[in-house]
Length: 217
Image: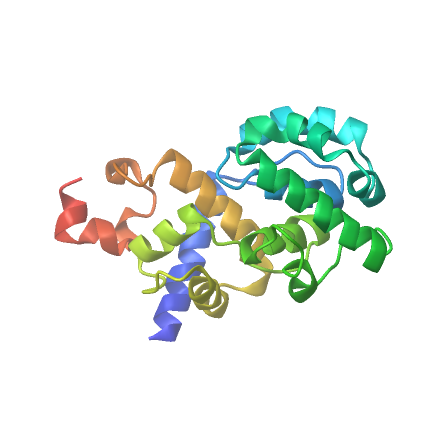
């Protein structure tokens, strides 16, 4: 059974990689610190909106110490367009204080250390590890969760369980890009409410499309 799933996973990856060869992180960043902050801001906010905020933010604050010592009200003003600005500004300031004081201003490179930071969950940590440090991991967001379930790569609703299920069937060298490929396909074709099954390059592999419900789309 697992061999069949592995074969299916490899075919899914090949097709998505051919369709979206340039799939990559859409958050503008120059280093892991900027990526961490951008990812915190991206919670319940579009990457496009975050990218409008960060030029001013990163020109004003460059290091963990800069953010740790930043005026909280000024930080809130800058990040306000990202929504939930009170909690996000506070999380950024507190996380950067910990990084400055306990990690010599360097972003941690382990899941355990990253998820101890305020405002940083498993998904955010995996974004930083994968796109910031090129450490193999799989980011499970709403698009990855939806595609994985529809295609039949997992039966779980739990993001962490889905992450582990995908790690079992996809080759390690595909993990980082896999998330970006699924996100692109989820945004452009396999959307939540009205998936474009007719034009989907994965429809012959997809349990959802092959089901009665999928055939009606």
